[in-house]
Length: 65
Image (cartoon, rainbow, N blue to C red; front, side, top):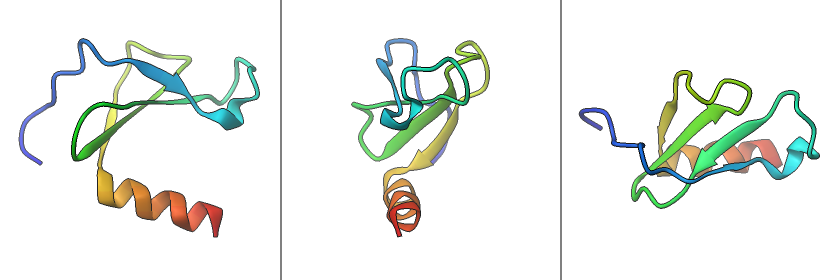
């Protein structure tokens, strides 16, 4: 991937594993073909990690193991 994607209109959603708490929450933004933006919900103005969709899918598959 080259450049930084424009995430100014991203709609973020918390992980279903966050259990509604305020700690250790991961958010992802959908609607960005080919990439999966990820951020820490406690620091929404902080850095965003951007993963390729294939890498993200592989990562989740390994977690579900």
